Amino acid sequence: MNLISAAQLSAFGWRGITDTMLTNLNNTLTKYDITTSARIAHFMSQCGHESGLGKYTQELASGTAYEGRADLGNTQWGDGPRYKGAGYIAYRP
Image (cartoon, rainbow, N blue to C red; front, top):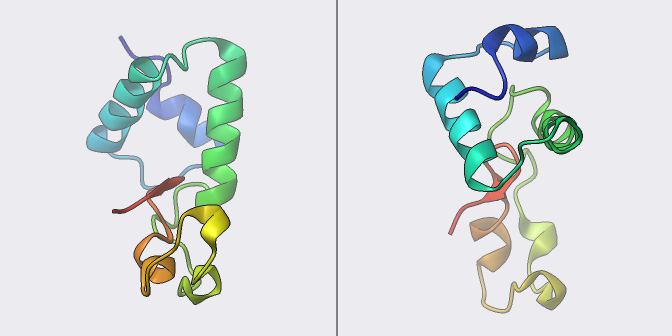
């Protein structure tokens, strides 16, 4: 079941929408119980803000500003760049 359509993403301002992106998005919404209108609106707003409406899937900064940030869990040398933002709002291990 699709909770959000390509037309809705497009109306929100997203560009370059693919079938894979739409499938992954709807699977994520279902998996994490982001299924109410309010939850979907908040999630999509946050994703849109963090990614420039889907334009960026990796944080533009190098990640060095996060080096040594124990409050973020970056306790080992290289953790800052290693765990900088990737995906629409996710991190990469």
